[in-house]
Image 1: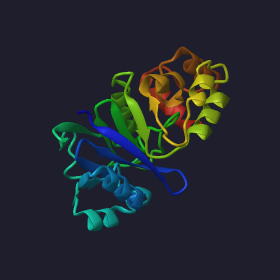
Image 2: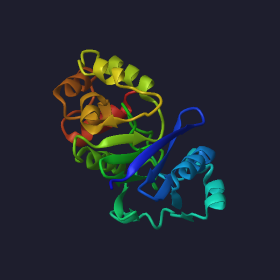
Image 3: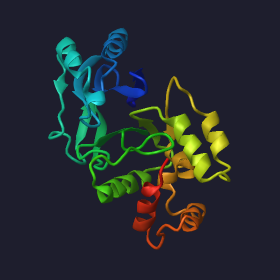
Length: 235
């Protein structure tokens, strides 16, 4: 039986998750701890693990309550080694370390579902709070190489703002209308193939984006230069 992902909105735009199989579950960024426990209880799920996409405050709030109420085990960053596997009901959840937004950023890959935290949002990416722009670039390139039908589940809902910026930057992009028409505030997600068509920060090799950067007088000679140029544009 494949693993499933349930999304929980909390705060203004935060998104937390429960990854689960037939009977076992893992909470990721559990700010909506009451809703997560209620959902798990209704489905008869045992919460085995509590973990995070990174340790910024808005992603760790609620974890203490989840651990206290469920008896689950905390999976900290040291246990989330790159390429390691968490098993739920015999099915793998793969861990990718994706430094950039923060040094401790990780993504969780379960079946077709990818929980991306603040590394990759729908329509945009996170800020580079780590200061390591090269690491962020490598992390984004790694995610871009995944299959196009990978379902992106982000750590925040910035979709409308992201599409507004994408229109401002690339007003002639014909994919944007269809992309925003699929937006569901009740379950924020997208396919990686669609991100590659609309998300400016994944389009640094697209001729249209390269032309836009050239018109702004920004460096475009190499992929790395184009990435830096995109990151320098004010939203």
